[in-house]
Length: 389
Image (tube, rainbow, N blue to C red; front, top):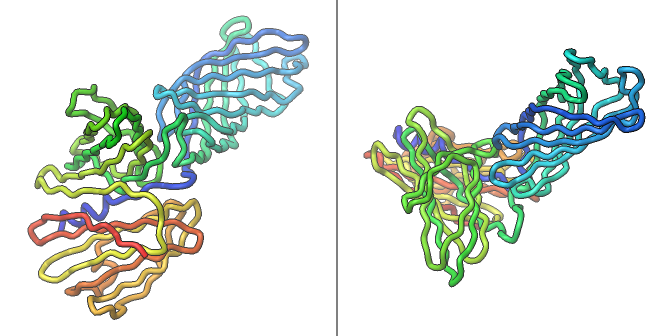
């Protein structure tokens, strides 16, 4: 029972469509300015971090049309880019209202700006977002040179199924668990006669990018990242493993993008007991998802349902016994990209000591997913995939 409860709680589902999340954008570096008529042009290069995605090289450039004494009489606008080690780029613009004070040597200044994300490459291809109250500060350290810091909270929306280049979305793995005693192994298979590129993106329960410790039993160097790209040889199989520290449990899901006939599945294992179950690669949607449950002879069933859409969902739910009689009607309301996991008897007391099915109906215009876990009294468990209607 304890093992099943843990499994039920760590079930998580992929964010599809556009994944919108709260994030913090922070940057620091140095600027250089060159006088141009009554104004100046500037560049900045330094380090930037985007919560949930990591740290990279930050670069911005722009112009100041006119300076009246030490006061900038015009709006300052510039472009920026944040380049991550994987090669993915976030890009957009920075807008500082008129009135910024230009500090003298050794002095500092502050401003509140607006930062807008307008696109990028890789996992940020087509991204949008805004950081409406972006706090900036700087200090002049020499003629035409200053230090620069900035930080702000906002939202970032990233297309879940778009990446740069020719690789295309191939499906998702609805659950992974790393750390806290759990180990995930992803098996990639290239069933074509040519080498094929494959890319895995990892997401946590809220749909944020999830950095995982990754190891490779076939000899690739270990790394920690929220994405992994490789080339799989024709007819080959590649294993990707993740086992975080016992003190920290990370849960979520994974997306697979590939060129050619790359497919795969996932195995999650509870290391202390050696029990494991598989998660198939899934794609698409259905009118409804039906999962069997069994709570007789000490068996237990855990369930999870996820709203894959970018809007809130009210999911009609029907619980039936093994004769088809309705035990309960319910509506499960989930936020955009939200999910719910539970043991069937905890939510529906009428399921105790019975066999039957639970049906999650996809709301009109929505997209959901579901999966179940069956556990024995001894703690053995297995994944139950949903049938569809």
